[in-house]
Image (cartoon, rainbow, N blue to C red):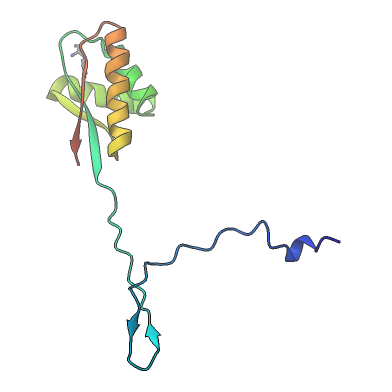
Amino acid sequence: MSSSPVFSSRNHSPPPPTPPLQPGRDEGDGATVVERQPQKTEPPRLYQVLLLNDDFTPMEFVVMVLQEFFRHDLDTATQIMLKIHHEGRGVCGVYTKDVAATKVELVLAVSRRAGHPLQCIMEAA
Ligand code: TYC
């Protein structure tokens, strides 16, 4: 007969990862002391994805890019596009390295396919 699901050994979430253990230190009396080391994982570096101004890419295309690839609403996308138009460059979003690099590649690909010279770059934030 199967045991009650309440006491089943299945369906438990795995135990949280334990910090790395220092190699055992023998105290000379046969006992081994093992101490927990504090975790020292650094937060990931972040990268800004920027669009650069040019004289040829239509404003509507830039606004579409800001909406579709950077999830800005129409008002925000229009403000960012105008900032780039007037100041030469502007931040579209801030991401981890791989996400930022993927967004740059996607924006460049869709821009070239549409025949526009739009430039998209990433910089350490
Ligand atoms: N300067 C472009 C124009 O007048 C518009 C534009 C805005 C282009 C932002 C690129 O990243 C850009 N059509």
